[in-house]
Structures are given as C-alpha cells and as structure tokens.
Length: 254
Image (cartoon, rainbow, N blue to C red; front, side, top):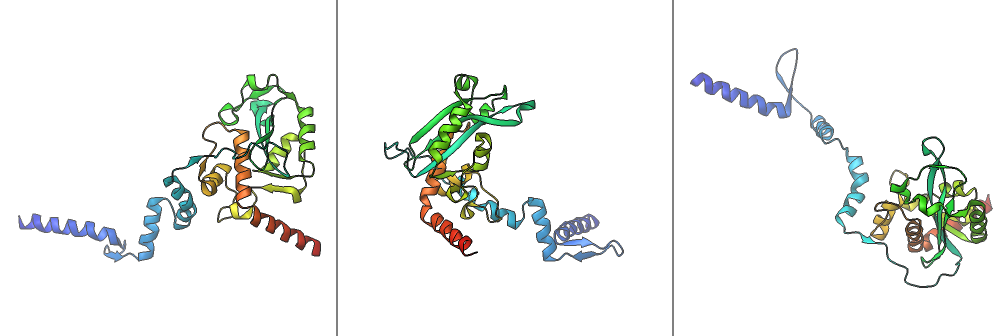
C-alpha cells in the first residue's frame, strides 16, 4: 500500500512538472521551461498569434453589434449630381466562365437615388451566370441593352463628374472605359479604409465597420453596392477631399 501511494504521488508530480518543465534527454531530469516558450506554445495551440488577434478584433467587435439594413434614400431627387456612385455585376464567358463581362450597371446620385440602372446583353455566350454572387439570371439579360449603347450612355453620364465606387478597376475593365484619377474616389484605395497592414477591406466589411449596415447578404445588388460606396464617401467626404487637394498641390509643386 505504501509503495502504491508513493507511485501515485510520483505520477501526480510528474504530471504537474510536465506543465512547467521538459526532460533533459542526457540526464533524464526535469528542466524548467522559460516563460517565453510557454507563451509560444500556448499561441501554437490557439493557432492565432497576438498580431492576428489584433487584426481581427475590429471585425469581432462588429459581429457583436446588430447590423441594420442600408438606409433608404431620404430624398426623392433623382437628378444627375456632381458626384455619382457606380457598381457593376458581371457574368462569366469562355472556358469555365472565367472571363468577366458586363451584365448590369447601376449609377446612383449623391442622395442614393438611381439615375441609371440597366441590364446588358453580353456579346458572347454566357457559360457562368454566377447567380449566387451576381444575382443575374438568363431572363434578366436576354432582352438587355446592347453593350455599345450602355457604354456610350455611361461615358456621357460620367463626363466631368466625380465617380465613387469600390474596386472600380474591375468595373472599368468590363466597361472598356477609364476615368480621370483626380475625379475617382475608390473606397478600396482610400487609406483610412484599409486594414492596419494596408490591405483593402471588402465593401461588406466597410459597410459593417463604418455604416453599421449589413450588405451583400446573399446575391449582390449593384444598386445597394453603389449606395454603400456613396454613403461611405459622404460620411468622410470632407477629409477625403482634403487629402485629394493636398495630393494635387504636392504634384503641382513637383
């Protein structure tokens, strides 16, 4: 009995030491483990380092907040204002639908009201409608406007105006258009909207973070996305325009 109690005590002590010590293979004796190693080991078990936890902390906080639907426009004014926001939805053509072409384009004014919203009939056979993301179905585009007509109408609307959007280079690519950089306000490029590591945040993340709004919950809507970008711009318009002006002055001096 005495021997059994000694064995039990020794085993318990061994388990206790294993939490705070390792074994020296040459001597077989327990060696104290440094606090740094203990911290590293705990990080390894969690699979998330301190920096990563810090990076996702904002998103975690927002998950605890009840996000609202994007607010509807407060005005009925549908005029073509000095600032417009744009978003496009694409479908896939070619092998496995990997090439993107325009299927819908929406423009909203400073009040968030629609000034242009058209479905576009692709010039190539659609091999992937991407409905789960684009919201586009065959019935939407079978009688859509011709691409060349939409391209010209959009070009005319944007001429001489400030254009707001998210990751606009994708929209320009399918429209086969460009826009003066000085008149472009891209929410994916605006420095204060980027993560602490300088990476662009998604429009969905930005809407949750700065508008307390839930967007892109399922298939995307080009109208909703354009409104989201416009609301983000309007909220930070003063600071954003100051940064554009400073950058312009700096380029003139050089």
